Image (cartoon, rainbow, N blue to C red; front, side, top):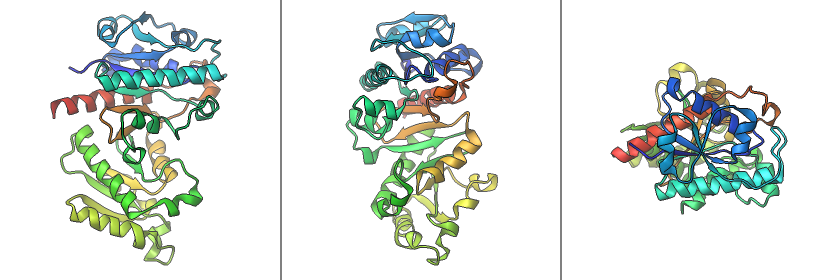
Length: 329
């Protein structure tokens, strides 16, 4: 049995508080194991009537979980208005994330689930990382290039080799070394977190039709094929590059465990199309398990009761499963 999971609430003006409350309310029907929220409990009280148990330590969460949502209180002052982000909320989100990471690193929490944040608000508050993934990696003592973002749904797992960068810069950022490093981390992560002993990896081509043997670009010839050959020499089951437009239909998905894609949208468009309400971001290469619902703050619907908790529930369940597998291995 792992320790309760820490769920940082994210921006208190976003939908994070609502989906955390709804995940707790669905705990029995969905089989959600004990977790606790880290953040300002006022944000939950504004959008939900679930009972709250104020706890001082994660150890108290398991006993309280059956009858109330356990919350470690972190607040920055100021008024919370759902749908109206402000600097107080951004600082609260960052402080909550910092505490939740620390609890997971110490082992007091069994895993970490991060709620959605507004990067624009965080940047205004002095945040200097590209996103929560890089922040968590740094706090865990892992170089950001070794922390790999995987998006996982019931029938598809994808890894963007480059992430939050302008599309015009992707070709220049790709390298054989980067592709190989991402693939190695993916193969290890599939074994460690998903229990897949012999992971099957495929690569999406960078150009239309995977470059047509150089007629529509040379990234496949100069970068992807040499990287795949190196991975194969290391004993990793890696294939491709394949034309991205034929890589994500049902028959194709049955042939691999994860698809590595050259840029952000190449990976996230198929994942979100197939699994918008169930997609989970899991960070590979960390000493802790970290997952996150694969959606944003949705300020436009915050406080309206419309937020769907599916991705948060999936993130909590995947964190539980991955942490349990690591404990058993």
